[in-house]
Length: 433
Image (cartoon, rainbow, N blue to C red; front, side, top):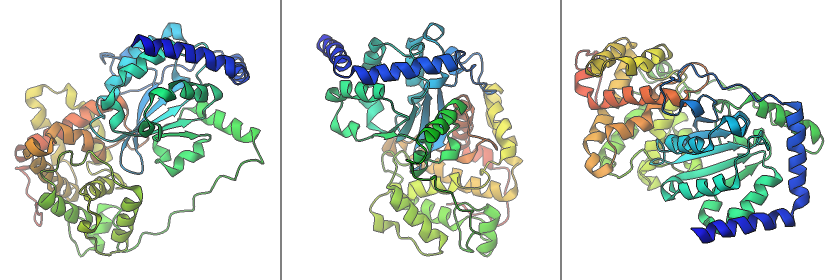
């Protein structure tokens, strides 16, 4: 690795010599920004973050956050430079460890990273040595399932840094990187409202737009939502679907995707871990919403019905486990291990009847999937990582990283102990896959 370090060091120096004006410009902006904002933002308050968290010293700043899903159903991780305190207040080695700790929960699935560059200044900027270490630390397992890296508000510093590392980065990985000059550009790729963008970044974006006013196309206004079609399946309540489908308790899209996956997907390795074409998913959603039939054989991709099932759950106006259960689910980690299954059962018993029936139908299927884990590699724990945040989320904002442990644990218990948890409540008219 010595040749690599030597090469990077020389390349870094050459880049500075070849592009002094660009870097000086960035440094000048840094200095101006530091004069305007000499006090770094305080640590981001996360009520769900416990002081016993293994990386509490880093996590409390909110630099790295979970931000829902992108348009393909892939988990989104954000990295906000403006949340980084001065270097003497943050152990960058610990920051790197925490980033790996976070990504380790997702690298088995397709995922996306959004990097907010604004706020990286001379007082909190990591060293070149740290960047070299970071690049070496993130081996193939981290890069393989990273499907997109969005760099928001890139500066000349970032572009020069890219040129430094470009010879060492594969062409395939390079295609995953997208520069976005304005926050509005994110709407095309992600569920923008889930991102929890720092206020400092929003203000910076507004300043940029003011600075370039007249040179930018106007921000496209989102039209008000139309009333749902009678055949609508996505983005409407379970009650709406039931009322429009002659009282059927299990939504047609759920029944059809589960039935198809049960017949053809139980032994597919990595089921629910992979994403599918965004356009294909939109096309299938449109067909369902128009009340038209869908033949998944036409798509020759088992991951299409898998993503459709996750998308249906994620687009419910209220999560299947309901907003009211959110705090109860978060409390599962404080319950003694031997009593957790009983506590799960108590929480589930309190669900509205319709939610209970649909949840039971889904968990029964996921239990079947876990029973075939020797072939599909999807244990109850793996399925919980995929479905946890599709079953429940807070009424405001998105779940924080610290909420993942209890949410995923609760989901894992539902799948592992399906028979025990759901055996004491039978509802007339319920069906199982």
